[in-house]
Length: 97
Image 1 (cartoon, rainbow, N blue to C red):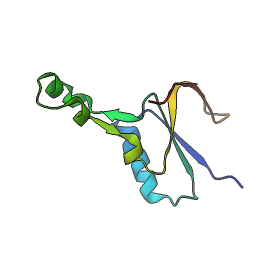
Image 2 (image 1 turned 120 degrees about the vertical axis):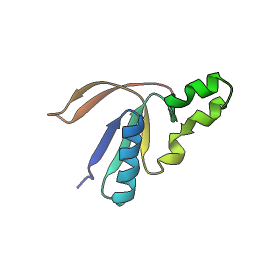
Image 3 (image 1 turned 120 degrees about the horizontal axis):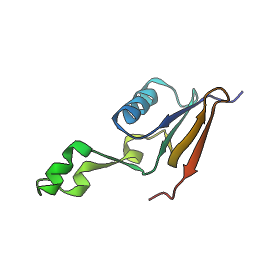
Image 4 (image 1 turned 60 degrees about the vertical axis):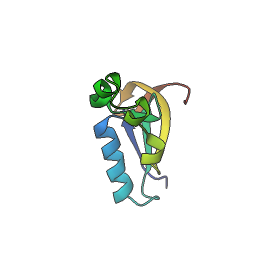
């Protein structure tokens, strides 16, 4: 029997928080966790004005998703279609950075 796959589209605050909670609650064999995101970092958009003003460095507002999500597989790209009935997500792949 294959283990279930949980797919989260987007690496915004909600998507990353959801995956962090799932990583804590589920044992490694319970489900495969996958994140679809065009980049492998999370950008804290509310802090961008601070970067523009020179208060923060650009590196301080971009956090590595690979460090935050240890058990989640990151699929570089964007979802362009979802068929919930068939449980299929069509992804346009992008190169990993």
